[in-house]
Length: 267
Image 1 (cartoon, rainbow, N blue to C red):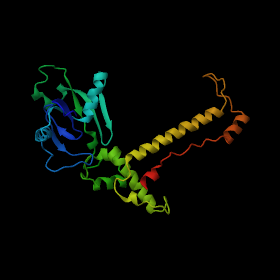
Image 2 (cartoon, rainbow, N blue to C red):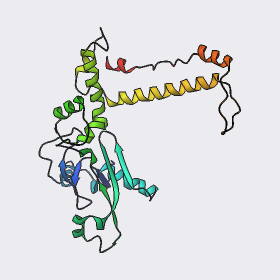
Image 3 (cartoon, helix red, strand yellow):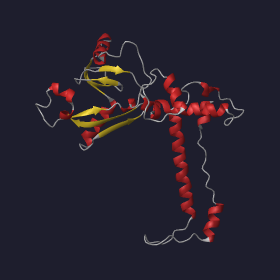
Image 4 (tube, helix red, strand yellow):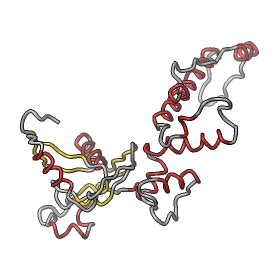
């Protein structure tokens, strides 16, 4: 955000809010583990303007938008056929385009008098699916533990199962249980894993990336050993020759380990 001259800026608000105007937003509840007192139920745009004025910052707030809605709208600028925007990050959410005439509570805004076929981006807040009663989504004991220990128990049920804020913690709880049972890391110092949220979800992405790269290397090595055969789509592949089998048996398909392992980052 440029603060050296008067700027016109939007405000991205990735939490549950209610809007009737593009330049105001009432925060309904905090999500993604965030929380601050005396904010829920308030117009956060007005609060932000007061904070800017207090710091004498030359910025004009003109729009408040949810990150998922922003993803959808930005994509529609590039491809007008885009119908859905989805966020898989710290939280998880989706937005889609809907005709205003199908939304009863928006009739009072008078949009249809200008354009009967007008559309609006709907923020689903699907991270809250199956909250409170937990009737539909299967949950493990690790999911239940994370939920009860969170700053908003029983809320954002779907988000707590799959989003980046919580996946690393789910893995940490599983690792701690296996350590306690004597299955993993025998004789090793694992005290850092005892701290909540010490195992970042980024470690899981690193593992998946390494596994994918290893599989690619294995396939490349195998293709280098197996001789090419001339086969049509209507015929079966020719059997691998005895010599090729010997080459496969003796081939080295090992992949070097990463220079910095997850275990090293935790110790």
